[in-house]
Each structure stands twice: as C-alpha cells, then as structure tokens.
Image 1 (spheres, rainbow, N blue to C red):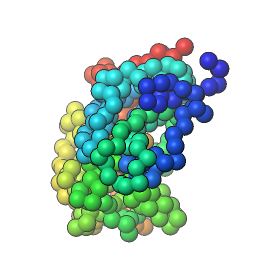
Image 2 (image 1 turned 180 degrees about the horizontal axis):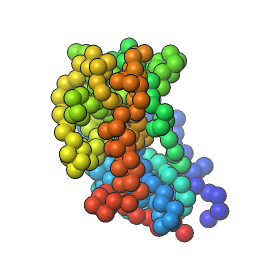
Image 3 (image 1 turned 90 degrees about the vertical axis):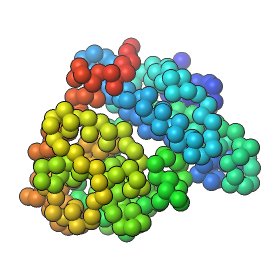
Amino acid sequence: MAESETYVYLNGNFVPDKDAVISVRTHALNYGTSVFEGIRGYWNESESRVYIFRMKEHYERMGRSCRIMFMNMPHSPDEYCDLTIKLIKMNNPKTDTYIRPIVYKSSYNISPALLNNPDGTTIFTAPLGQYVDIHKGLHVCVSSWKRLTDNVIPPRGKIGGSYCNAALIVSEAKKSGFDEAITLTNDEKIGEGSAMNLFIVRNGKLVTSTVTDDILEGITRDTIIHMANELNIPVETRRIDRSELYICEEAFFCGTGAQVSPVTMVDHRPIADGNIGPISKKLQDLYFEIVRGKVEKYKHWCTPVDIE
Ligand code: PMP
C-alpha cells in the first residue's frame, strides 16, 4: 500500500480511490436515485484515535432511507460499521474526517423506475474541518426556494436527488451575500437549513421544528435535545413562524457537517444584540467535548479507531 494512497469501499472491495469507477450509464447518476449518509470522525491527538460519532444511528437512518427508495441496503448497519472502521484504518487520517456511505441504483435502465434495479454501495472518506463557520455567527436569509415536501421527495430520507433542492437554496443564499438559508415548508412554516437542522431560543426555551415539517430527522438535533435535557434547558418541538426568527433570543444550526453553528442575523435583522448567545455557546462547547470522546457519559456514542 503506497503511503499516500486513499482507499474507497466499492461493492465488496477496498480499492484505491482512482480505481473506484462506475459507468456513466449508472441509474443514480442519471436520476439521482441514491441515498447517503454523512458521518464525522473526530481526531483525538492525545489518544491517537479517531472517534466516529453515532455511527450506527447513521447507518440505521440509511436503512430507513433505503426503505423509502425500494432499495435493499447491501449490508446491515453493524456490517457497515465494521467496513467503515476498516476503511478508516486503511486511510489512517490524523485529522477530522468525513465519512460518506452511499447506496445507489446501479442498473443501466433507461427508465427512472426503482424496480429490477440492483443496489450498489460505496463508502469514501475525506478530511473535513469546518463546513460552515462555527465561530463568527452566521448571517442567513429565509430562502425563496421552498423545501421539497413529503409527497414530492420525502426530506425525511437522505436521498441524493433531493439535494438539488438544498443546492438551489444554499447557492442562492451565497450569491446574495448570506452564509446560509432557512427553508420554509409548503405551508410557510420554518423547516431547517439547506443541510442542517435549526434551533431557536424563545423565553429561555429551545424550540425546533417538528419532524413532520419536512426536515431530516437529524442525529445532531437528537444529540442537542439529549444535551439540553441534561443541562435542564427546556425543549419545545413545534411549528415555528418566520417572524419568530426576528424576535428570538438566539438561533443556531446543527448537523454532522454544520456541527453547532450559531446564527446572529436573519434577513438583515440582528438576533437579540447580534452576538452569539449563551445557550448556543454552552451547547456548542459541550458538543465538542462529547464528539471528541471526552465526556464519559456519552462515550457510547463515540466509536474509537486507533490510528498508527
Ligand atoms: N437536514 C438536512 C437536510 C441535512 O442534509 C442534514 C445533514 N445530514 C441535517 C439536517 C442534519 O442531520 P444530521 O445531524 O443527522 O447530520
């Protein structure tokens, strides 16, 4: 194995990145018929380990996305966890790492149908630091693009094609000078960010949209709810109006990529005094302790992989 070679898992084999090639005829490339996950491995320098955060939950969610898309997930969540650990060991990262498993429709059929269409799978890894700035306080807008709905392409599934919606949302926001955007449901309630969930603080309570408001059922969202319970911060899961974004005390995004990213301005209106709020900061600090395997109580969420 060459020192600098990066490996990828593809349909039963670990192969060098450059050899992990699939045909242009592949159904998923033509029709967006894939499901995927985004998982983070956190580098812990002092222990020379990568801690993979809530790995099995991500693969269980990938299984649910497969069910929506008439896919038979090629491996069980436990098998995917073992494959991921092997891949991390082969790639030997000494940095924070993103893990991207995919299940995809692999036939060469010229029809979007999901039936008689075998499922391929791959896992690749890539170094990943910050996906959005977690320190400065993000300035965001409410997107002019609405979120897909459950009866269009279910946002509850992490489905490749549906990320064209996220792409339009985030690209428009950036072109207009914002850092990110917040989605509205078809009936104009607040959903989430382009690829992250949202919390606001109102009257000292954390508020987040319901899972029936066309959001992904985020694993970080669930982590934040656990942490808030432990810190005795009340959490309300309910529908959120757009104008609540303008009068809330704090807001932050959360997600595997986004981690915990405070939002300090929405649609040109500063949130409270325009600084990162105390609840957001407290949750952010605890989150980073947890994901690096430093909090005993949450170590069961962190799978250690020793790096040579
Ligand atoms: N919503 C969307 C649309 C996403 O793509 C993501 C990223 N996976 C999230 C929310 C956050 O989910 P998680 O915390 O499970 O990464």
